[in-house]
View: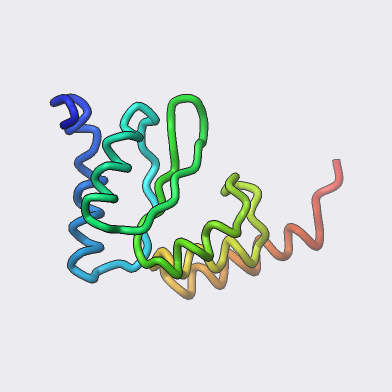
Length: 120
């Protein structure tokens, strides 16, 4: 069991598990403290929820969890989310349930930036 402080840090994570189990979302991405990795793995395995954990830094991790097919797709992406291609960024946003219209606008902006990089 996590300490009281760690449990407070994990409240959003716990709520995401609730949302997944209630069918509100098929894929979740949450950034958590690396120190909570063992508990996060324990809890997702206990709940039999597929997951992927990627290191962000020494102190933080990205935790993807949800539908197994979604996890398989995410595992093919660059683990550095800021380096995703416009296409992968679009796919991830849609899978996470972000607004479709806003994702289309974001995709077009990122595509435009890729095709017309600023010169300086």
